[in-house]
Image (cartoon, rainbow, N blue to C red):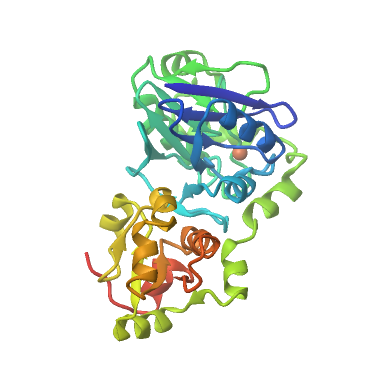
Length: 345
Ligand SMILES: [Fe+2]
């Protein structure tokens, strides 16, 4: 197991790099834009391939490294389904899993600090974002924060985990690096309340100033630019109606880039092949499945995913590999459903 806790001293943010082995897939939680060079260097040094980057919530105190990492490593970006950020490839909800090779994180919806706050549980440790901090809790007075929801998230979910579970938060301002659930229950001053009403009163009377970065970070973290815009400008995007027509003419090999969990939860476009996005690379190479389909089979490749983010990156990769006829479904399965096109289970 490879586990690195990385620190951004400007915003006191912790980021976490996880992988099961050298030479394998990696995942990062809450990366910070200014530290992206360091992450890339570390990935290279540890011989890791970044496959997923998660933000626990929309941050107000720093600019996320998600888009820069996506740009440089072609990784999948992950946030909760409530997020207002546009860069997100996979939107998760309670009970989902975020998996890479040898590592599985269980998704816990823990709103309160924001309405898009999630925690991620991995065996003996939980990444709590700004929901539960070491001897503190995330403020609840902006970004749809809600002290009642936070009370429920902490007392109803996080404190139900075994006492020995390690707590890894998104920030610490005092230099602590890790705690446990048992320790926080016993010693976190915010949690020594008798009722939800007490907790709400406590949180509503903190009177904190807004974070210095807030006016910059929040809008920037919501609008991080889409690979989809670039792909559409080049004429490589299809509307649901255009895709339906092409499918009816039978000239298209349609490729679903999503994961099994997303396919069973949201359904599939009938007739699609399945190649999860992290496994796409070799298929586009000479001798790969998709090269053969496109060249020998004279099929036009059309990629789709949940929202069009992964498929836009796939189209760029296909064109780079010389497959000039590759396009994608703009807006992904979400747009397909909105247009009333058929879904299979
Ligand atoms: Fe936060």
